[in-house]
Length: 76
Image 1 (tube, one colour):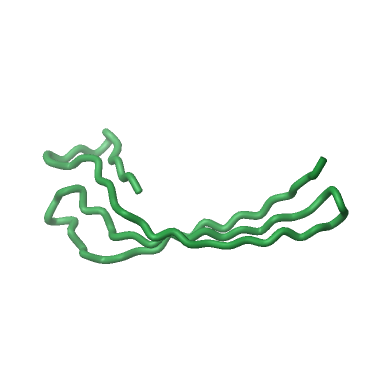
Image 2 (cartoon, rainbow, N blue to C red):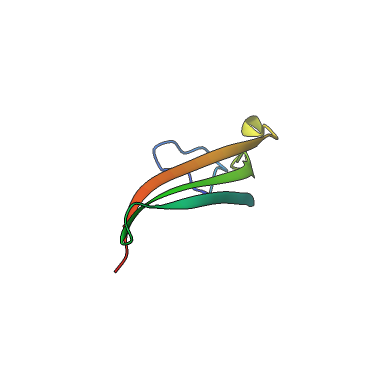
């Protein structure tokens, strides 16, 4: 994951930071008719909290980001 602070809050030494992430997920398709269906998905990311190179922000913790989604599909 790439973390890039905005220019609204600038601190000397603070800059873009990249962290490795463990990505997992799954999903299911539910057929309503032969051509129309519903899709439910879940994706999770586990990564170390960014500190942007500042010792005052160094928490040395791991966090989780969840991204569920629901959609409809149409087959031709």
